[in-house]
Length: 153
Image (cartoon, rainbow, N blue to C red; front, side, top):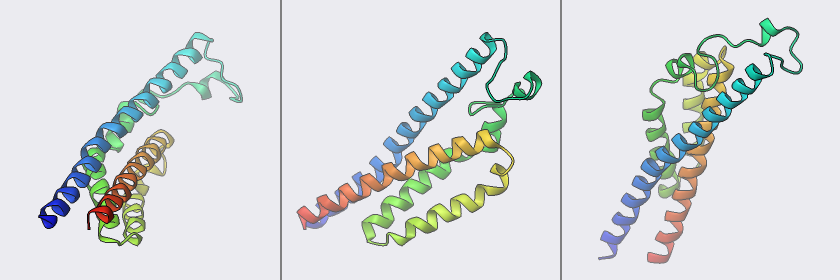
């Protein structure tokens, strides 16, 4: 019976990490997108003036710029699947007691995306926000499940 409970906790932790993490990350990125659009609208309403920018031409964003632009979404395509795998790996590493594996996950993800993100500040911002939310959530779920497993066994 105890084995079934342990399996159930593992399965629940992995599912919670992946699916609630996907929802949570998506919601936060949607808020960031909304804030970015509001800031662009305010800049446009103020006549295109931005503090610290040499000229209005330099301040004008290119079509598709910003964290919610089509270009950013094209650069970060596949991010949903990568996030699922990332959360599975992080929570799994914690549950098996191999926390150094989290560093491997972060390194592989960062190095794999670096060429795409190097020249795109908006995509880089979205990548960092999404990654941190995803990592924090999956680590919290993993450690909570580990504590629960400690109570059960």
